[in-house]
Every structure is written in C-alpha cells, then in structure tokens.
Length: 229
Picture 1 (cartoon, helix red, strand yellow):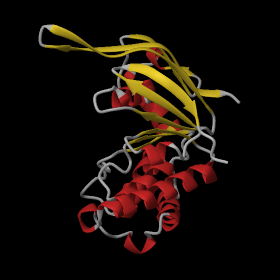
Picture 2 (picture 1 turned 120 degrees about the vertical axis):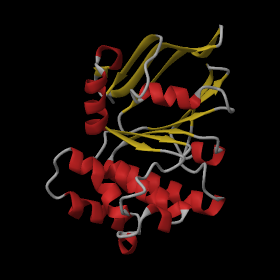
Picture 3 (picture 1 turned 180 degrees about the vertical axis):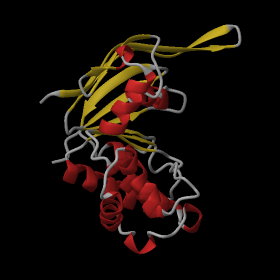
C-alpha cells in the first residue's frame, strides 16, 4: 500500500508572551491509502494542532509532511489550497456550515468551486445517502446538530477526497446521534475508498479505526493496531 500521509520529525511551537510553548515534537508516523486512523489524547496534547498541520492548514516549525505525494512545506499557500480543494475533505466539531445557504447549497459549494456542472444533482444524491434529501431546502438554523453534521459529511465527500480529516466529529452531539453520525461516516468512507484520519476523545470511535496514535504532552505515547475482526 502507498503512503498517503507521511510525517517526519515534526515540531511545532507557539510564542506565548515571552515564552516559547512547544506543542508537538518528535512526531513520526505515516498513514496508508484507504486506512482509517485515529489520533487520541487528553485535551492540550496537540491533537487538533497535528491535524491542522497534516491537512496543510498550518505550517510546522521543522520536519516534513507529505500529503497525497506533495511535500507541504515546499508548496505556496495557494498551492496548498488547491491540494486541499482537490484531494482533501474536512469534518469539524462545529459543523462549519454557511448559515445563509441551504443544506443542498452547502454540499454543493466545493463542487461549484471546482466548476462541476452537475453540482446540484451530485449534492442531492449525497444528501440522499445521509438521509436528508427531504430537508435539502432547509437552512442550518432549521436543522438539529445531528442533521447539520450529516450535511457536513455529505459536503466532505462531495469532492471525492483521497483523504478525509475529521476533528472531533461527534464532539457537539449527544451519544445516540454521535453513534449514528459515526456509522454514516465509516460507511461513506468504506464506500468511497477514502483514507480517514480522525481526532477524537471518544475511545469507542477510535477503536472502530484500524490504528490509533496516542499523544501526550505533544509527543507520541504509543501506536496501536486495532483488530476489528
């Protein structure tokens, strides 16, 4: 299997007043194509920072990240944006839907940015897959949290990403709704053959992936393979 994400000797610090705060150091791991991979750890362990670096949303201080065959540090901001638009999907804890657009229009945004002629048709099919075709004309404020996250899932898969990054996808949902969203995410992921990288506090969710990377204090504590039968 080819590596879709390869992280070597990664370090990230922030200036906090007069101090330098190291958030991540000595981070080395890789993720293979079509693998499902979880990043877990306590609050403040650097999980979300690591996800942002891997997705090219932020830049590291030192070390290299190769994503979909490109070395992120050698790309300009515009080139990284193009790579994300073409190859990467995102699901966030707070849904990140555009409040002035309907569910259908939210899903269609990445497709329209790419100049897809059948954006609305494809978006409607995706809403059908997440069980929301009957709510296509509703705005985010008219949808429950679980419904908003399902719209976000449909949008994340709309550009047929090679890799999907999910940051605490069930963080704002109750347990039952969270379980449904996870089932949907894993099913869509399997169906489309996407690589999945999830940041989560949820141990049960992490155990549904193939490998778990545990972070503590900005360092890798352990890497664990999961046997899902």
